[in-house]
Image (tube, rainbow, N blue to C red; front, side, top):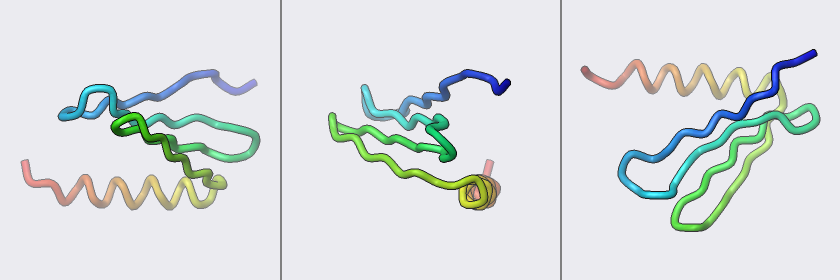
Length: 64
């Protein structure tokens, strides 16, 4: 049995904007909302893993 959870990250500079990730069927859905406009992408498992690695790479470029 898999865990049931919802990940929702709020934008720091725009009230009501968010990014949400969840599993739907065999895909990871990444839903973005800004100024009341929603957009979604569906990634298969291999693509979601590649995406997460790309995000980590970009995070590591941020200078503290």
